[in-house]
Length: 127
Length: 128
Image (tube, rainbow over all chains, first blue to last red; front, side):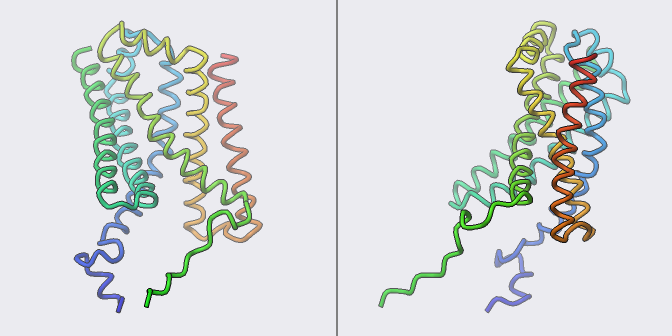
């Protein structure tokens, strides 16, 4: 019989195994922050669209810009990682493929964040 | 005796097409598009970090007609997904969930995402 205790026990893999509430809250928290980050992002893109390297380094090397951009990347990648996870959980049924695609999702999300952060660090510290 | 087949849920296509349904699907599609679109941002940042040459290449791609088309679509996708998120926040508080309210809120969202996108491009690109 499926009862409350069975669903609450993470070992049975019934229900969210305690991850769903955290996902829900993380998704909304990062989403709300992304509204603010998008305003900053629009400003940055408009400011630097088509700009040469000197100008880009000049703007991004500003500590305020660099820190906000770095936080944006981390926040966006956290948000999109859970979002894509939800999509995968909906559509990929085969268990091995499921695990593989979830892994690819992690690699992509963390990879995007890392490439972005390393690029910002390079621009800030070495020009 | 062969086991009795399990009941199946009705197929997706038997449901009437509604605007809220379409916007739900579009929210997911724009989410996936934004996911892939982060590559545009990191390609730009990485190119700027790497040097003059790579940055020129990225700028040339972004300023080509195809690049501009992709960036225009990405602008709309970002704005639309953001507004969709705000719509979900409103729904989380139990507001605008009645038939009239939810129809109105998705119409406002669609109109706002188009206006924001056209506005941003008009102000910052076309009539700069």
